[in-house]
Length: 128
Image (cartoon, rainbow, N blue to C red):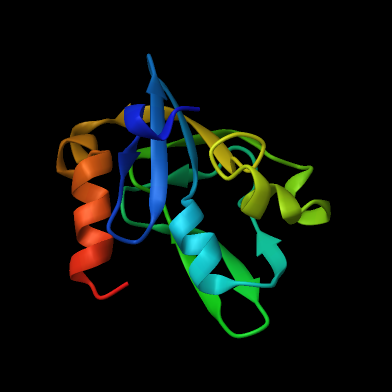
């Protein structure tokens, strides 16, 4: 996916909306900040998430970070390859590194998300 067409949360998740289907992952910035990933936990199929709710975690040798849903919906697909292919997150975070897909139940939270220039500015202003 083209990072310029995505929406971003301040907690470093990205969102791609295609009709009422949302694809969610974490940004290359987050992956680089975590370094040396060792584990990812993703939610069960069918789980309903609210915007801002923790849906999983990613663990590196130096930290564990919660993953937050940028939008509300029901989990319809998980990237089942990801736990065994963590390199996908560092090599292609916006492609094969996607994490979950949701059927969107409330897209109002999408309005509060950042576009790519806004996200880049957020990363710079946070001292990253």
